[in-house]
Length: 117
Image (cartoon, rainbow, N blue to C red):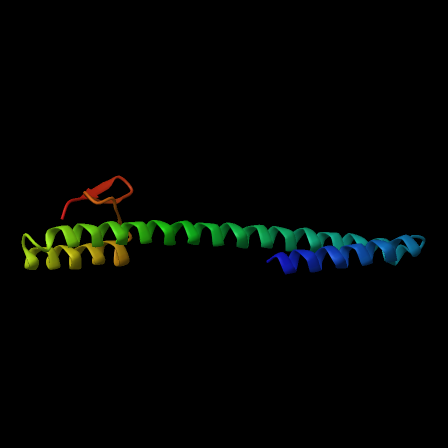
C-alpha cells in the first residue's frame, strides 16, 4: 500500500510540474481537475482498504486469543475428564470458528449473547 501512495505522489508531482509549464492551455486546466478528482478517489480507496485490513487484523487477533483460551481450558480439563474435555473443545471450536463467538476462558460471547459450555 505504501508503494501505491508513493507512486501516486510521484505522478502528482510530475503532473503539477507539467501544469506549471502549460497553465495557459484550457485543456490543461480540465485535465488537472480530472486528475485531482482521480487522485482523491484513489486516496479514498486506499483509506477504505486500510480500514478493511485493520478490521480483518483485529478479527484475526480476537479469534487467535479465543482459540488460545479454549486450548488452555482444554488442557486444564483433560486430566479430570478426557471425553468431556474433548466434547467441550469440539463445541468451542464450532462456536469460535463457525459461529463467530469469542471465548474469554470462562464463557463464549457474541455481542450481548453469552453461552456457557
